[in-house]
Length: 97
Image (cartoon, rainbow, N blue to C red; front, top):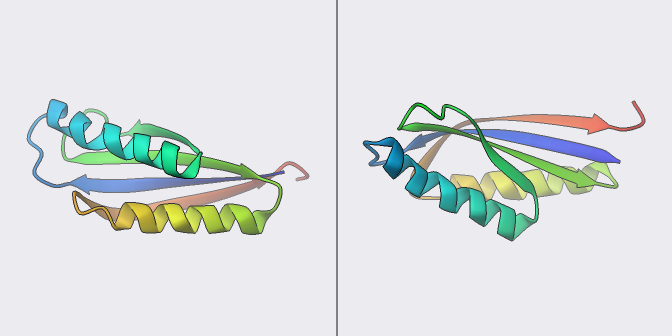
């Protein structure tokens, strides 16, 4: 079994309060979860209103499928006009290690 994770570091657009930030982050988290059937959570920068870190985990039987899903996730987030993708960090784990 392979587990892949990706963390997105995001800069939010026209946001001035934490309430406005939630209005951007919640729909993005829901869209990722619904579209790709993955585990998603806001993982860091909760107290910064213009920054967000979103973590995603994928489980699959082979590494190539995990990589393909992570690539699709990255393209999906990068295509969102309301956020700027500042960076990503990927990790892979194999249960046979």
